[in-house]
Length: 169
Image (cartoon, rainbow, N blue to C red):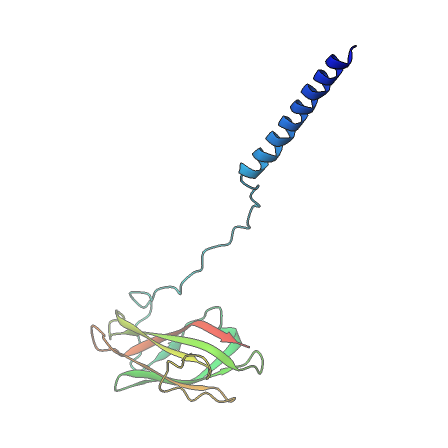
C-alpha cells in the first residue's frame, strides 16, 4: 500500500473514531441522568374528625379521653367540663422524662342528645419555639390546659378529648 493510501486510510479511521467518541460524549451530555427511584412514603395523615354523634348517651358534665396513638405515652387527669364552657385538665408525659416540645389537645363538644356541636383545640409549644397557648403552665410536672368552647352551634353537656399531636425530646 502506498504512503498516500495509508495516510488517507489512517486519517479516515481517526476521523471516524473521533466522530464516534464525540457522539458518545455529546449524547451523554444531553441525556437526562438516570433517575433513582425514591421510596414511596405515605401522605401525612391528619387527625380523624370528631364523630357527628356519640354511640352512648352522654352523662352531663362527663369528659372522656379518646384512645389514640399518643394516649399510652401520657396521663391526663382532672378532665372537667366547666360552665364557661371549656374543658380543663392536666397532662403529664409518662413514657419518659423529656420535655414536651409541641402538644395539641382537641375537644369535641356534644349536646344532651349526643350530637356534635363543635370542636376546638389547645396548642402548646415549648419556650424557645412559638408559644401559642396562653393558659399553659408547662413545668417538669406537666401542663395545665384549658380548651375553650368557642363557636359552637349549641350548648355542650359533654366532651371527648383527643391528642392529635405530641412531640417530646
